[in-house]
Length: 324
Image 1 (tube, rainbow, N blue to C red):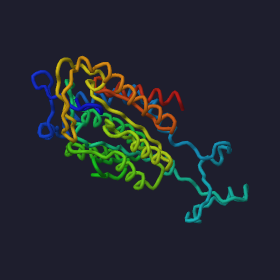
Image 2: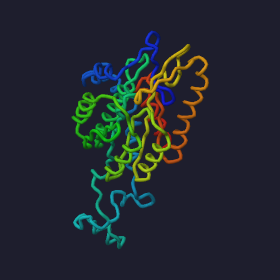
Image 3: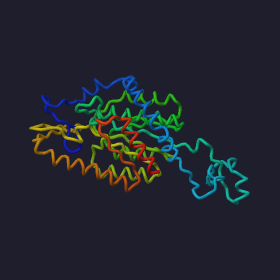
């Protein structure tokens, strides 16, 4: 099943299984992510959530001058290395302090879509979209909405290390650039989420919005430490924990053989007798991430692939907006 506790079911007569080569063979071209129904979903999302998204993204642009008058809301303190030509001498005359004129471009937030390429992301039980396809739809919607706000957005992909890095851009062509890159990727092989997040933290030189799409199939402790490091580096982090419907509900019974999607380790169990234990474990697994993220100022968004991605994203943005 591709769950963090078991793996994929291998009873071919009862449960369809996605092998690595099958994933590669059926990975769609960019046109699938731009097909009419997906475009309609993104368009509906834009219409339904435009005011929410605007407030959400602008909320990330919080002024560093809370408590100052509006006159100073577009300035920041001078620091060594700044161009002296950017000093606002009128402000200096009033305050006897050096402030730099803060240009409009500096108020934009730079976003990075961070995609997990592990083999487990290529799994689906009975949904049309795999977890990876679902993540692409979420990423495409967020990319589209950020570009609409004229915020630069880029893409980073990883498995055991960083594989691709697309620089952040705010041009309208960026959505196509992101999808074109994603359409040529394959979710296969093992992953090292913690190591990759540490690499990303080292890569980002400026405060950014990091949107991570993963099924979190890894030992939690190293991943949590890496998330803390990313957050303590000054970045805003949204963790989209994407699970297949079957990984959340465990709709299996009888004797089932599971295969761990990345190591291929196999385990045969009586699914009916194991269901209650599994559901408790998966709930505790998700609750741990939810608790740790809350304590570290990280947004944790658990989504399963049975929910339409536009609804999932709109509900998240609405809840985010209500907290701002």
